[in-house]
Image 1 (spheres, helix red, strand yellow):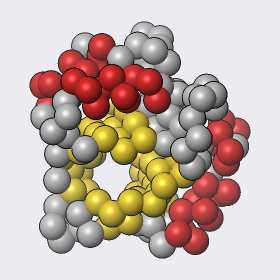
Image 2 (cartoon, rainbow, N blue to C red):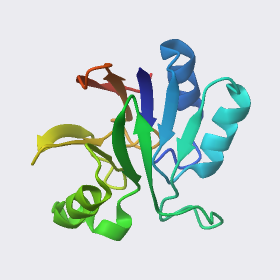
Image 3 (cartoon, rainbow, N blue to C red):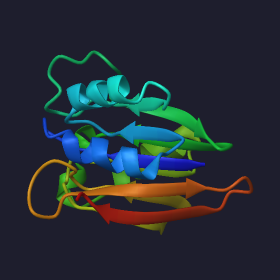
Length: 157
């Protein structure tokens, strides 16, 4: 399963749209601070499922601050991250919430810093910001049928 993961587009959707057009994922995940950008993406690619969670700048969203979804037989905990104090660099609260949900994968944004790691048995991913700054990034996440996870941080062109 090919998944494109974005966060923090902040009104700059074109780079995300171009990346999806090129990658042609099975699913897109947007981790907040750009819900309207995600809506634009849904209109552009109605055949691709898009899952979103709101960020701290998505003032008009009433969606829940986190979602737990099934991805290729694995549970993924999705959140923007601002309610879990991820900017402090400590992920304890976020990881605890993900563990309590039964997730194997955790995805968050908010920090504008891309990266991924395995922490305490959880695959943790932050795709960075797809909208602002010189290092605009997103993540290609590929999940295999027997639980294999491959990830690549990509630059927005």
